[in-house]
Image (cartoon, rainbow, N blue to C red; front, side, top):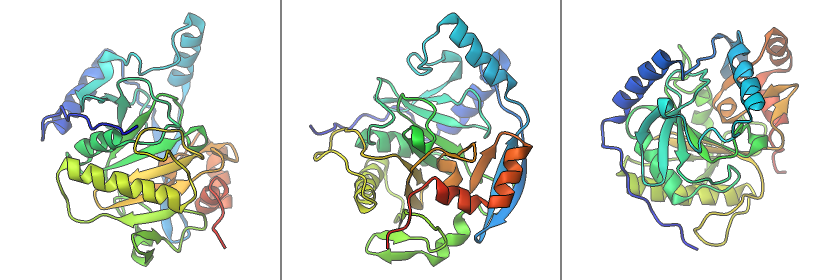
Amino acid sequence: MKTEKSKILIRKGTLRDALMRATARALGTGALLPIPTEYEFVEDGGVRFFVRSLTSLARKDEEKKKQKQEGRPVNPFLPFDKDLFVADISEAHVAVLNKYNVVEHHLLVVTREFEDQETLLTIRDFEALWACLQEYNSLGFYNGGEAAGASQRHKHLQVVPLPLAPEGPAVPLEPLFGGAQFKGKMGTLPGLPFLHVFARLGAACPIPAAAEKTFALYRDMLRHVGIKGPAGDGPGKQSGPYCLLVTREWMLLVPRSVEFFEGISINSLGYAGALLVRDLQQMETLKMRGPMEALRNVALPLRK
């Protein structure tokens, strides 16, 4: 069954202002609960990884305990908290703030109706993503399943502003891009010691064309790394977990094996070169073993 396209509702040039207004409002009402962090840079494999360390998870842990005691629904997106609302993106998607954000102005692009996070992305998902990416310099990403770092089952893409770190390249992994090797459209980054596929995008184009182009490329990338999807264009469950990163210039897809490395949860941002640890012990583990080794351990091995 073919997935129909959806009408874009967000007016061009308005998302950034809507995001700023929503952030100010949500901070004022207490709906938005940023998690404070400290950070360090850890160099490994030609990449200067940006590693944040949480200083406290007390508010998030307290809220989870309260929800459990009150028997509130597990799905935070159906319905979503209106105090976290940013904008109507399309007929199929709405944008809300990440309640417990580590990255400032972290946007969640959520399906209006329930779809499982292990359902493959559709043309509608890419339309909504591009409606956001074309508004300001940002990184879109998708944690395809629990083993890829997804913490909620309701399908949601995520968008964070660039640069990711206060210094260095916009995306810490970028120093590896210059060595990219291609066979047709499908590329690899020799510095990455695990299965992945990299693609460069061409000139900017309107949202419908950008969505069609990257949706087709996404499906090719999945097949390239052995992740099976539905025979047609409609939604279907993925055959394996993966991380997907998308900017205006490139896409990177990494199949996953497990979520954790030595207790450290790794999601798609890890494959951009930005990691998050819970405490000093995890930071020391990451320094000792190396961030690239951590990424390798939660991905799949390179094909021989």
